Length: 481
Image (cartoon, rainbow, N blue to C red; front, side):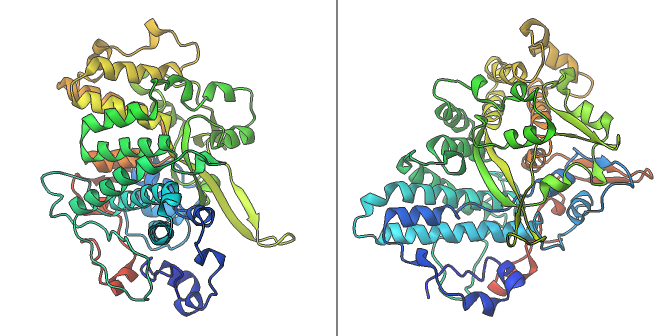
């Protein structure tokens, strides 16, 4: 049987359905991948149908112990206390791990069909998408479950299994190898796959178009600290430097109600959404009212980086206690037409114009190209401040240095902090702040309502999400604790 059964995916399927039941399923028509169109249909499933937004936000310094009246949510609680995940439900690290390897399995099955086709040239576009999708899912896994890339240590730091073949056995053995090895494989898939991509999708926002692949490459090389490549990939994403007209158009949402704002924020027509993910998730139900969330003061401070109010963002409150930026819409799909039960989905931004712009800004900072970095930061500011006036609102060298002078004397570190603070405002609720914290090894402090101070120091092993315990059945070691 050649259906991508993947017990390795990590026993999450085993947990949800039972291994025997899963293996007894009859293969569907996609197992006969004998046309490019059928391979394209399979590739719809080569993207992780899960997200870690709530978990990531809860781990970061974006949240506070807001109110005992907040909803008790296991994902929110586990993230806030940096616990090893116990929950296997949607929005949990265990669920995300399985979703990523499910996506990888689909990509590998597609690649197998492309490579074995009698006319492989006809499958070039599908092969390109499959390679980049495989690279993306592995990148997200190594980002969450391994240490951040560091040229000094990554040749020894444990990575995650890089799976490149369809699985035909139940208990196949795997090894984690190293972060450096995983990065080498990601780069190999990305550089081989990107030139093959053809932009002929009917719903391009849900696929790796060339733009999305370059956007992903800018994120990958930022994590790899290859700043020249970050800049070149960002430039390839928008060759005419048309970032300002392609950010998410918050000004256009001003007349919309709360529901319509959420729909438009994650719409495929939103120019800022370079790549969207359809995820099984309750993020839209939970991100705004959990205990460990945002107060009015916290959100107002967060969305006014360097004292510049991102007033275009649509902010709301729940019971005058829980404050949030209006972003996610809950799609509920009933089990049957007349059922009262079903599954919640959320369309979430995976790659955006704003991220690529800020990736380039950070790369320019790290190359000491401060004028270019200021231009990128001010491009974002110009689209986030109502009544924007360049002379009033733009950042300058003096403004940045003066704002951070009490704590930061190194100009490069001051500029870096400015980029990170702009990102924290722009990507609130989207998990990006945790990715920056993890990548740059930034300490995190949480203060409970009773005054208890909890610190996640740099290099703390809890920064690495724990792997699902069932992976040990495939010979994969867990992260040390």
